[in-house]
Image 1 (cartoon, helix red, strand yellow):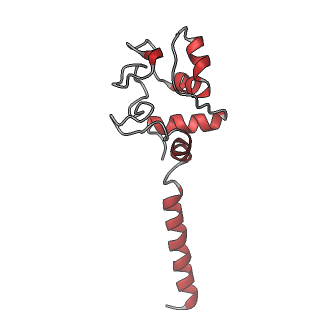
Image 2 (image 1 turned 30 degrees about the vertical axis):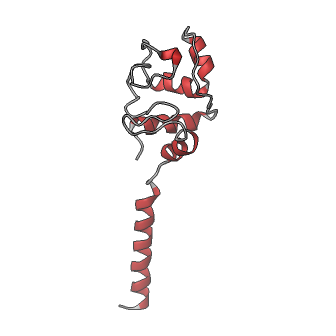
Length: 129
């Protein structure tokens, strides 16, 4: 194999390897790990300070076996869809007030950037590559 062919093959392999790992760990996953994973896991039944968020999308608030959020004790009519998740991670206190729910939640994280919230929600839905 001549030098030109060797470098062409090496370059092709390097590009292919980079392309394969570029999507690994998308921005939603990275944001979740950075901003959410201290308190939440995405493993079913594995709660931390906050509930596991496995299967949260489409589930009614307060219906998991996590009992620490007094505001959702006994369940609610709130379904965790894109709009509700977005409002919740923007500001939990405002979300509860807008829904007419009294009670508290220990969660105090607020994600201000809309794009970050969208990426995290996409990750929670399982839509991220």
